[in-house]
Length: 338
Image 1: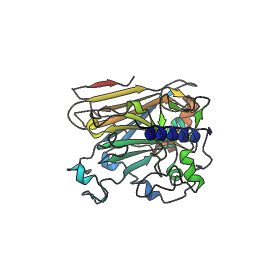
Image 2: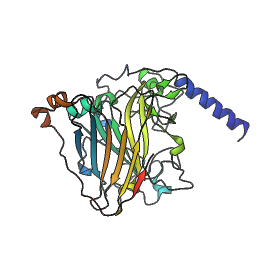
Image 3: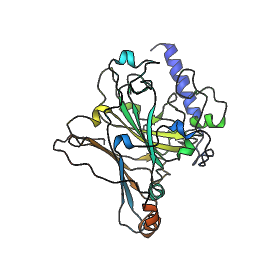
Image 4: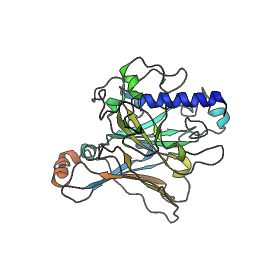
């Protein structure tokens, strides 16, 4: 490492620490107002994945836990690069008419009783044929399962001044309050650790994406594609204006395809934990027989017993998503994230 590299690293850390000084409990910008077009959020349907949810809470009257299961099947008609060195370049167009590097987002909102019990508003299953930056980390075909705690309307307000010719916000040049909110990541003092995130999570300064939010993860757990394959899910969390907006299991396409069952589970502890409904456990399981993937998050429910049943009224349950359970496979590969 040269002295220039060392100085750049030092300046970057100082800049990031400065951005993390402000700690607030909730966003002052996001209040369910629509600021832009909903169309920018992608396709408002999970139909191409034959996706469904299943939701349960424990029977405790006053202190109960939820289990939210999102099930989907990879759509083989989604494009994949035949020659990544050529196809995964700006301007290269896939068979679906979109750039290989383009966003493919598919979302649906959840029933009101799920929203009130878990804080989860909607789930967006996003597919990246070429992956996305950082290079040699996530640049392989994969899914980002964005479990949003804010509404689609809120996301239309999450805009910024972008680095030219990139899809990310410019950390050095923001002309609006909405843009500056991407770089307002709440922290716990005096350590500066990101609050309501697991220990070891760091903010990706150049990974703030409009309509989506910031991205933080444990860099020590990320794959290094120069020396190894990416084989297991990785947890990413998104922040915006000092609050958590996404809980995001991210996993390579290889984890949710093939004939072998795969299973990954991880228990989570948070620094500065003030959002009680954040998941305490997440699991990603793939059934090699049915080819369905289940993403299960479990945590403390905000509603229990009679209070939950009152919210989940016959009228509300008419809007409940169809529920189903994938069949079990014979082969099994278990990976424990602890």
